[in-house]
Image (cartoon, rainbow, N blue to C red; front, top):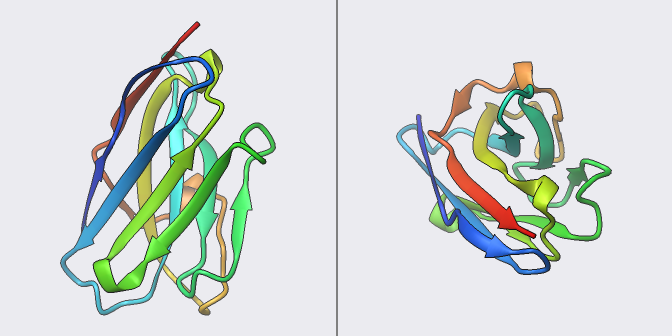
Length: 126
């Protein structure tokens, strides 16, 4: 399974970006998907996750109300819409996949994901 993330860039505070993550390879499996981020000198942290069925989501408190995770299984793609961006959102953003136990299962644990993309840089200027 390969994951490739797109959509990062430089944006001013208050702006928006949409990240995309395309899953290829063994896409017949049911994968729960997550977005994580890692700022310089910090550990990788959970941002958002969505179940394979798309009916269940979970967000870090720091992004609730500003970020929205969604997926299009027909396109094997998961998205992260990021609005009202802040300088503290600056990080490399990674998408990740794990085999789902059920269609509604959501996982927030970094160590629980099986496959990772290469990351995309998001920089928010003040």
